[in-house]
Image (cartoon, rainbow, N blue to C red; front, top):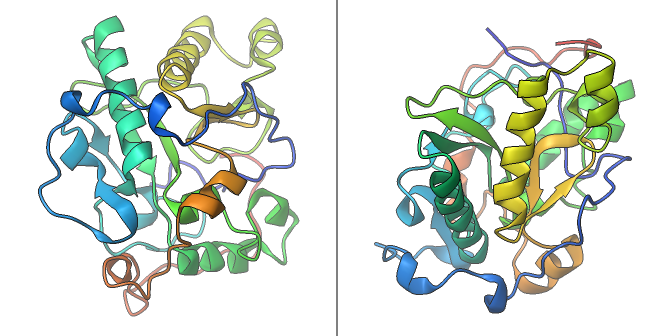
Length: 260
């Protein structure tokens, strides 16, 4: 069953940074001695998240039909990030373990090739929801391997209750109005506590959150990513595994409902 039929992008109109973005620089990264070796070099500086931290759970929503398009957009179920971003994520996972040994990080989306961004844009460009999706002409931080969507999970990989599903569009996903949402009964104290723990470990490890999506975190600014990293496409030897156009998929809805 599709948990959420809404879609988000790093370019929501209310994407007001909650904190100043951490620059993608070596000074902000954890000590390399804390990291396991990379078994096999990959193109474009990418690494597999679980090669850096095997304790992180992966559930790529766009490798399933559990996403707003109802389509499988990724063929590969392996999650990749730029190494600097993956090392920051490893640091966040370590910090989480120190605070809550019973919890782990659970990744919903990481590197997203530009061709997939185009598919998502095509699904919403003629609907009222187009403002929630990054125009591929502008690009998304996901297209550079410098953003990650994630949540907290227990040791068995079951996600914690964050008040909304991943990809929920509406005020309940907003992080800067949580006190008001709590007072109005839209969020519970435990849901807000879970969100704030996620933000605490991510921001302390060099990530920037955004106002409209509790699940989304940037490793640097878009300008920094464009300067440092290549724009990733399925035409690359590695990334062509992400996309299999012949795989059967559900039809794209003409419009998206207002609630999950």
